[in-house]
Every structure is written in structure tokens, then in C-alpha cells.
Length: 219
Image (cartoon, rainbow, N blue to C red):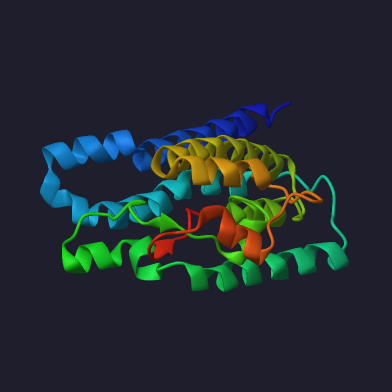
């Protein structure tokens, strides 16, 4: 019971991080910043990514400060393959993203505003199985680690944030792409692959039929 205040602090810290992250990523804030300080918009994505890293420090520090022993231990034949799949999945999926654009460096160097989702939608191979593959890979890694009470609270908070965030992301993508993304959402699960609910390569191509070169949805 004496550890309860620290566990509550961990939950609050991760909750605040998720709320701030969603607020900073929201189109409403971007529109307000663009309307009031248009000169800042080329740096918005770069500043967003920098703040995302800096704001991550307090909840991580609180979580690592929790002294409790692990509640369970995953066997190596589960933990290590999960870690390898996570890292390999992230690295491999980068082939379908413009890293300079994703980090915000291109907008900063060219002094252009963030491009958002102005192009047609295309799907990477991982998007044929889940709509938010980077979220899914993160959850795989988190839930296959040895967790003490502090890390369990953090993992639960991050999981809740990713579930809510994926729904918000779907809403934004439907607003941008309309019926094609709605058809895609109806065919492919959000975070957890399910039997029979995936797209073959030809199905993905026929489902969206981009008119011009496009870009993958946010991971």
C-alpha cells in the first residue's frame, strides 16, 4: 500500500502525456497556430517530435523509479522473438515512409508547411493486416516484457492511449479520405490481426485505387 502514491503518479503522468500528445497532434491546434503564426508552420512537425521526446522523460523517470520486483517473467523464447519482430517491423516499414517528412526535417529545410494527408492513400504491407501497425508493434513489445507494478500501470495507460488514439486517427483519416478509408477500416482490424480480416496485395490495390502517387497513413 505504501507504493500506491507512486503508482497513481505513474498513471497520471502517462495520462497527461497521452492527452498532451493528442492535443499537439490535433488538427485544431495546427489550424490555430497556422492562422496566428504562419511562419512557425514549417517547424511544427519538428517541434512536435522534439516535444514528444522531451515530454516522455517525466513518465519514464517515474516508471523506472518504481522499486517493485517483476510480477512475472516471460520465457526467453517469447520475449526475444517479440523484440526482434518489433525492431524488424519498425525498420522494414520505414521503406514506405518519407523519414525526412515524418521527422519534420524536410518542412524545416524547405520552409514549407506540413503536407498532412493531401495525397491519395496507399497501404504498406503491414497495413494490410492492421490499420495502425506501429501501435501494434509497440503493444507487442510492451506486453512481452517482464513487468513490475509500475511498468504494468504504465503499460496499461499506454495501451489505453493507443486504443483511443487509433480511434481518433481513424476519424481523421475518414475525414480526409472518405469512403476508401471507410471501406479499408471495415476490412482490416485496428491493432490486433484477426483471422480472415486482412487484404491481399491485389485487394489492397483495388480497394483504394489511388489516382496519383500517395502516402501511407500514419503508422
